[in-house]
Image 1 (spheres, rainbow, N blue to C red):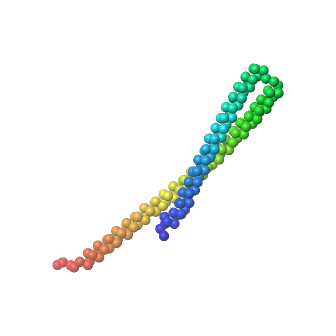
Image 2 (cartoon, rainbow, N blue to C red):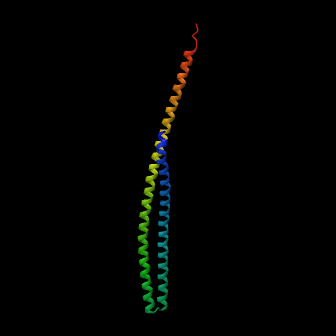
Length: 149
């Protein structure tokens, strides 16, 4: 069995792992983008809410309604804090998944290079063998010719 055939199953498993890791990295990147978009939405909503609060206070707002506004604003602030933490987690997961993807891709590239080098070596050996066989046939044919003279 040729050397590249022996390592080919390993290369195939690396290709599968590389595709899987690439998919995970894409999903992690999407989750990070989604988390950032959600934070933007929350920040935008908070700004609109504060603007609405200013208008209502100017129009004359009751004490209980103002308290409810502040309670809701506190909950919104807590949601923003949690979303920022979610972004940190998403970024960490994304970085990890991208790092693992690069590691597998590097392994795959290295194994593929070894296989290609072995194929080149195999072709060189086959070429030398063929040349030796041609040289031997030519030599036998030359010795088999009757001598002139």
